Image (cartoon, rainbow, N blue to C red; front, side, top):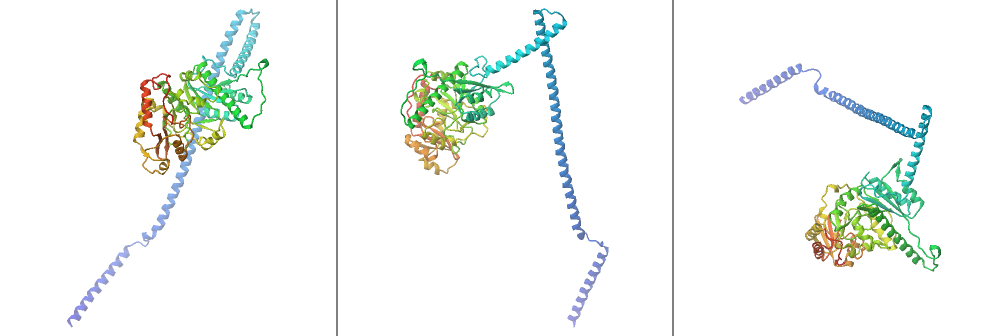
Length: 547
């Protein structure tokens, strides 16, 4: 009974609490607003989005209006500058007219003293006629002067502009010559590099093309006209050319034609260099052929490197060409090296070196001759890893050379990356410094056993080398890697003491003879003994061995 009463009491307490809680909820609900904020939330978010869209639209319109206003301001400034320029030109014209009037008055006064005047009217009429006559004479003089400068070989030593002379050796190919001239002029500074175009023969189309560049808009340009005319062979009666009829094969005739072309090319080079470095007294001349394109920094490179010809007598030329400059091996646009193999294209020499060459210059192909060790005497050219010229066509080549051109030379890479050679210290290229520098690099480089090992190498970026012990080994390595497999008088192209330096992947690769240390030490001995190095004379032979 007691337990039943306790349960009843508990139930009553719970019921009372529930009733109290329910009553409290009713009171709270009575004070709440009819529209719940939670129900209004979606409508507020939509309104905010609409306002944001309107703001974005206003911002876009504002930006458009601002851009339009900027363009209007630019046009206004351009118009103001143009008007100012017109005003300045008008003032200049007035000044010239006043100066011309003063000259005419002075001239009339001078003529008046030499001729008696009948009266003022006659004097005035005479003055006007004299002014017209003077103007006509001036026009005739100008035409004569222009026609005179259109003739070849008219520039004198006194009137030659200063700078480094650039000479295009032109054959009778108008299309190729035009391309080369345009490439040179596109990249050539306004001053500092007078351009000489040297024509061989008298082809009228070539002549007219060259003359078209001598004047632009009535003003004399920095382009000058040279013309080399071959002398006729004398023989027979009257000193005329004699003709002998013989039976020859096609191959023999082609060989004779090629030999004749090489002879003409050699004599043309000799004559042009003599004109520029002797007759016109330039201290340096850059020679390029009429089938080359030049890089945008071609002249910056020449200007910066030209001083090396004055500072180091062991440097015989500066070249923009590297026969190993294919894209796979031309990696560093700022890299320069020494090469004791004279380049075929785009080379600059000094007048001192030309005086040494001129007396022995051959009447046939000059390229093998200039690469003889007796002539080079331990000297070298400076060449870039990445070429500053490329060759568009194969000149004067045999079938084998044509194949070499198509497989290798035509794939040479032209530099596209800017390099400030003018702020670089190029003193390391002096012989005494460079030999020690290259010796240290090769000694510290990792040695690989073969070309196959080079191609399979996956080491860290740095310097690597592969060694060869003779010409056949070098040619095999070159073929395997994709380098030109030809030799220049027994030496790899673009090599220095037999050492070829190229880029290969992320590495610098030296292809060096096994006795490279001995060769570099030998050249250092020649420097100390005065046989070819800096400050040495040009006498003395070279005992440097071939590969």
